[in-house]
Length: 590
View 1 (cartoon, one colour):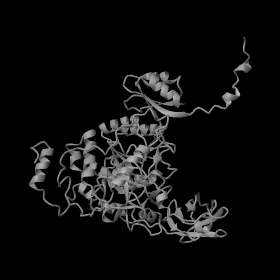
View 2 (spheres, one colour; view 1 turned 90 degrees about the vertical axis):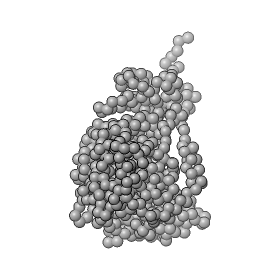
View 3 (cartoon, one colour; view 1 turned 120 degrees about the vertical axis):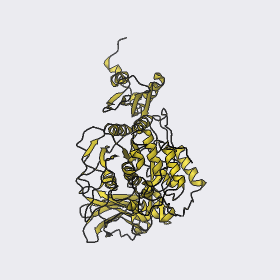
View 4 (cartoon, helix red, strand yellow; view 1 turned 135 degrees about the vertical axis):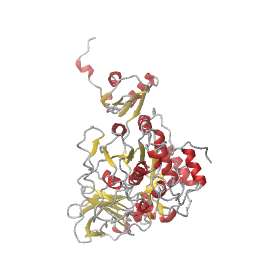
């Protein structure tokens, strides 16, 4: 019997079907010999090919970015018999500017009472001027509310089923120019404007606490990272800032264009750029710890994915980058990203990445054995008692020398180092300064030190001058073996990098009492966190790349003197000279 066009209409049962879930995937041949065009033709009938990854002059298998149903991706994987690598193109998240977490919020014993509570908060400077665009978070007994202040410094917040007495805490985070504010059990009035005053943010005028803790103050003035190229893979850098106007190199990692990188809408990359490369100012500003290095900005979009990180790594190879500082990550690893990380390492790119700010397991790519993972530490007394940083310190784990591990810093066996990441005064767009927290900042400190080592350490003018994997692992060894142990390795890695020891200026290790108080419970929690990482239907087909601390060279460190020697430095012993000769292949080791 002939059918009419009406017979093809969906039935009521068809209309009730759930929408098909689609996921963005990265698909690449497992081996060599397949072109981008051949790959696209092979995949065209399976889904919507968004684009085929352009290697930008870098050799390697092509990668197609495809949106398709999860079931189709699983069927494709089965049908190709392992000839294709198929994995979700995971979103990346920034690893800086940690906000208040549940561990910082005090509990209240009061029961929520009555109707919704509407509160007006006004945020002012000490001079009485309104503070615009400050984030205000009000925490009640049952819920919380958050908003930004307007041009008058005001924000209206509503808490359901609360009264003023059940408000447990208030947090104020200004964009720049002021310290944040933390008040427990604040006095709040429902029918009035509640005014809060922020303390001004003084500029250090010298090294910040982090620079002193890492002993950058003992490094000779001529050690400035000259002739070293550093890539900052982050949200861009605002070059309108007076201390960052000299930065001339950059690219948008997704589009490949060179016009968009000099704006930083989220304000995440600009502080990291200042730590690495801020130009010195006579009467104001902060210090960049590798000011003569050549900073290349690899801008990631706000919705960055693993495919964008691959593009940024390709840019590093194309432009001959020495050190790449990565301020983003994701929970699960990526075989395709790991492949590009290994390729970059073999061509001499030393990758340093933020461990993450969830307080849980180390993010990828920081957890890769080819990458140095950096966690955050803070220092007691480097912030006001009513600041957001004081809230972090109240819930922190004590470390040596007045340092502490903030609750947001990710931890685990893959952690390599820790560095300043609490109460760091840094550049902020468009042309100000802000107090910032996060492991991205810690990674920037280590990246700056890495540039000084590559520029001035004798090893990289001789035995490890060639840009290859041996050079990378030697750099990682120097960073880790000269670090000051300050706490449990799962929380602080090998410790806090020591610029003076890393550069051979000093050979002594500071006597710091280490409170190794992280026991079996902390280790078990970290392991359980890895087990809790969810596998959705789109993730079930993925092979997880290896995790672990960064691989290092297993050779003796060169004794002082290196390229220079500090006044009063100790004379090398016979044992040290023999070790140096063994490294140079002139004699057997001791």
